[in-house]
Length: 196
Image 1: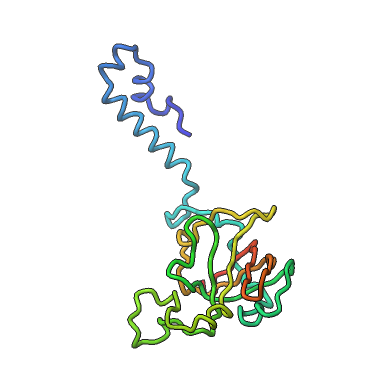
Image 2: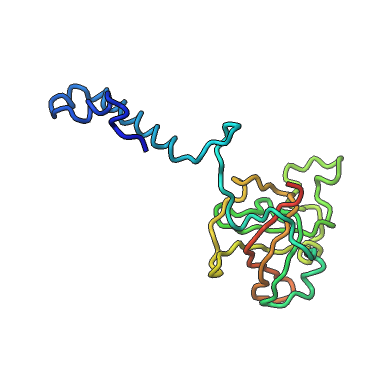
């Protein structure tokens, strides 16, 4: 954080009397904006040699590919509540498969073709799989909820980290309650995006 001694003009304005501050209100306002800008720049992280700001990735973002991941269609029929698993699928299944700010994402088995896989299809939202049979989508879809170490859902904006519908991911976590064979929720502590 810069000291005012390094900036004599700002120090002079800050040390001025009450009447002088009223006179120099506009200048003071500019000085405050300038100082705030310098503080903001100083707090934005270290600069890399290329001039880019270093951003720390969230702990749940896995950089290496988890081993032994199973597809949704492989895992869903036999997954047991409380079992630790790695599940692989494509983000999709609805028009908005990633809930804003909640760390909840729907995935679909990668073997299920989306409209994007058909060059003749001009569907504006190919990740919603609207052309597929409902019974296939029920069997091939799972829900991933990012949780912290205490199993509390976390707020995460996947889109701000570059995740997009139809990205293929692997989620590592614990199988949540299974009220029926149609429901598969993975309470994930980590997600790896394949191919990035």
